[in-house]
Length: 225
Image (cartoon, rainbow, N blue to C red; front, side, top):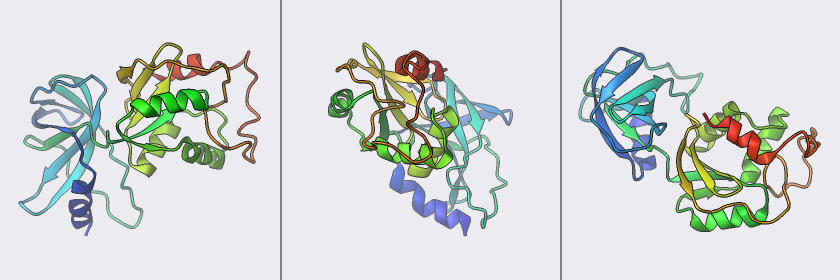
């Protein structure tokens, strides 16, 4: 049953991705056919059992043009379903840039958010959704794990994070910079922890740190590896 679900779900979310194949693997990483993508690009490893059945067996993170490392693919985790026992192996397909057609913008104010959104070509999820998820957790500052869990929940893999003189395009799973936009921050207002439309969320999410204790740009830059 799990294989059938993945078989039906997988084609619906592939968009402008780059495909390679595993040449050899030691179980933790693999050599693949060369790709011309930024280091840090995430993706998936797909194993085919036959012409009609396939499943995602790992998340892939690009470490070099011909090398990936494996992570657990937990976006489809279901307690009621068994975990697949298949491990990545020679010949498996590697799809990099998986879910790069959906993105989240982290900006200090509405003006900057709108400037980035005008340049982005992906389907954008509103930051209110992320703010609501943080409120549920009672987290004042979003951590890498918060971003990863949000991206898993809402099926995206790309973040636009505003900086003073440009915008970093960051992979949601490796948290490495994989590109940039020449769109810097505009406007003087800075809303912490990022622009959203909530005035205040119960649970003191926006009883945030004072500006001399927390700097929007420095904080998010430090999150990038």
